[in-house]
Structure formats: structure tokens, C-alpha cells
Amino acid sequence: MLAPYACHPTQSRGRLHPEDESTFRSCFQRDRDRIIHASAFRRLKHKTQVFIEHEGDYFRTRLTHSIEVAQVARTIAGVLGLNEELTEAVALAHDLGHTPFGHTGEEALDALMEPYGGFDHNAQALKIVTSLERHYAEWDGLNLTWETLEGIAKHNGPVTGRLPFALTEYSRRHDLELDTYASAEAQVAALADDIAYNNHDLHDGLRAELFSTDELAELPLVGPCFARVDELYPGLNYYRRRHEALRRFFGVLVEDVIAVAKARLADLAPLSVADIRGAGRPMVQFSPEVWEQLKVIRAFLFTRMYRAPAVVEMRVQVTQVVDELFPLFMAQTDLLPKQWRKDVEDAEGETALARIVADYIAGMTDRFALQEHERLIGGIAADSYVVARD
Image 1 (tube, rainbow, N blue to C red):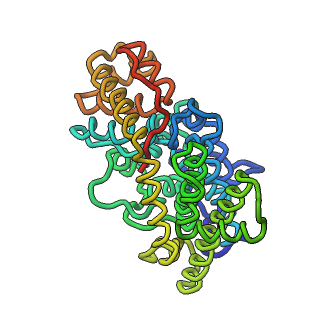
Image 2: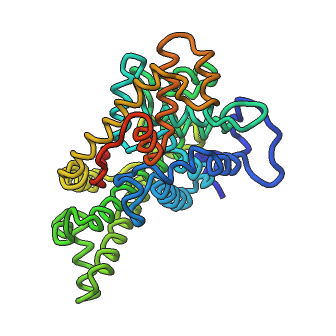
Image 3: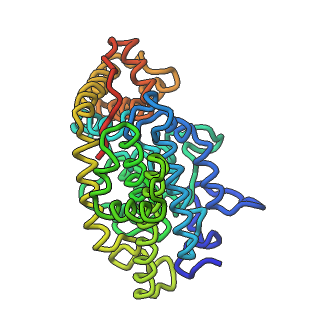
């Protein structure tokens, strides 16, 4: 049973290109399935989360991160009476627009694209599912429902001010009402992202030996989890101890978001998803107390993991890869694959060309970007394995 403020499939605003409905899947289930089968989704397997994907089989990649986000999001959505399929679709798609090398690659590409309107991975995700995936006979993109597109575009909140060009271009054809909050389903996906990476980055940082469990035990939220495990299981094996503590930390974050969302929903008493969009504030958030403590953990991760000396060295190296590939493709478009050259032929002006080149580079995996740089320009010393994220 869905809550009255949930997104009901039968009340969807539909797709840009009308289609016959499936006899056995809801429109949001079809969205989720199309995202899973998209080429861009498969490429997340070889895209950086924090560690370059080939440097360790146990580290999260952008794909495994997205799967973890979807799991958390479905759990929270189910408790709140929201549409789990729509929540999962937004969660699985939220990082489709990421460049190779994580946020480091995005920063490099954004700087290169500054004269042409910049680059934003959220807007790029929307462009992928509305244009760049080209497999269907009757349209470009995946032809997702309005609700899924809305969630991808503004799961982090209303998009105001200077809009990324990809959002501007699509909104001219299909208004996503960017100045309002998204559905509660999309808000859940956004908070599930925060929960997932705050948890798994601690796991991966420990595995990479960038910090110790003793240091984590001094952090807020995490420290009490270690204390509880030590109380219940004195002398527990090191690996089991850290897993038990971090899974409890994970649970603390999920339970906090659920409690806050329930309280805010009870206070607003929304009768429709329109009430959620027009509430003027998000319904799904951390409590102020947990958020303050999370900021301490995020600052710890930023210093000890995202900006560790090995990280800074690799940031310079992979930035060089993007910095050198972009002008090369701008100057020699014949180096682009055949399927991209038709777009180049149709491009009118340098800005249009730059956006095509940015789309191509953004779609690269870590390994392909390194291989192309090696083939076309000459390799870099990839003896460090950490790449920073925000």
C-alpha cells in the first residue's frame, strides 16, 4: 500500500514519447529496468568511486556504490510508504553522469568546459538517459517517465541560479519544474547516497590502511558502535569487529533518516506528491544532531582519505589525462569513434563541438581513459591507487 504522498504509477505524468503500457510491469519498474540495461550503467563497473577500479577487487566502484545506494533507498522508501521502484530507479541512475576518475575527473572536465557552459555530473546523467543512450528505434535516450527524470535532475533539491546547459536544453522540451523540490522518492535516493558513501568509504579507507580502527573509535557516531561491539563480543577478531561496528553505524544513519522523515511527514500531513514538491523544505533529512556529527566524520575522511598524500599525487596525474585528451579531440575529431563523427558533422560552432567531446570523455571508464591517453599521447605513472572525491 502506497502512502497518499507517494508517486503512484497510474498517476505518472508519462513519457516525452508516448508508449503503450506494459501488461505486467509498472512504468517505474520499466524505468528501473531500462537503467540497468543501459550502456552507461554497465560502464560504472570501471569508474572510480574513491579508488581506481583496477587497484583492488574489494574496493567500491561507481557501480557497486550505486547498487548499495539503491538497497538503502528501497529500505527507507518501504518504511515510509513510498514507491520503491521509482526510488530504486533514481538511486541506480544518480551517478550515470560521472566522468572517469570520480570527482577529480569531473573537476578537470568542468574547468575545460568553463568557456562552453561548464560540466555537471547530475546534468550529464539526465543527458545520458534523454539523449546519449541511443538504442531504441523511435527515440534517443531511454524515454523514462517524468517522475524518474525529475528525480535524476533535482534529487539534491531545487536547481536554481545558473543552470547546467544539459538541464536547460532538456527543460525546453520537457519542463521538470526545476525550482521545486522533487518527490519524496527522489529525496530518499539522495539521502541513501550520503548514507552509503559515508559508510563504505570508512570500510575502504580501513582496507587501504589510510587510518586505523582505533582512530575511527574516536569519531562521533562510530565510536559508540565500536564500544557496543566490544561490550557484546570482547576479544572479537579484528576484521569481524570493524565490520560489526560499521554495520551498526550504517544502521544509525538509516534509522535517523527514517525517524526525521516520519516526523516531518506527520507535521506536513501531505495528501499528494504535489504537497511534497510544494513544501518549501525537504522531507527526508538527517537530524541536526546526527548531521553535526557526520560533518566531523566527513572532515576526517576528507583529510585522511580524499586528500591523503597519495591521493594528491594521483589527482595531478589523472587530471593530466583529461587535460590532454580534451584539446586533442577538439583539434583532431577524426580520432573520435565513427558513431560520434556524425554528431561532429552536425555540430554548429566550437561550443557544440566541445560538448560532444565532453560527452565522449565523460563516458569513458578509468581504464579506457588511461588506455587512450597511453595510445594517443603517452602514459602516466599510475603507481598510486587513490583518487579523491568531494
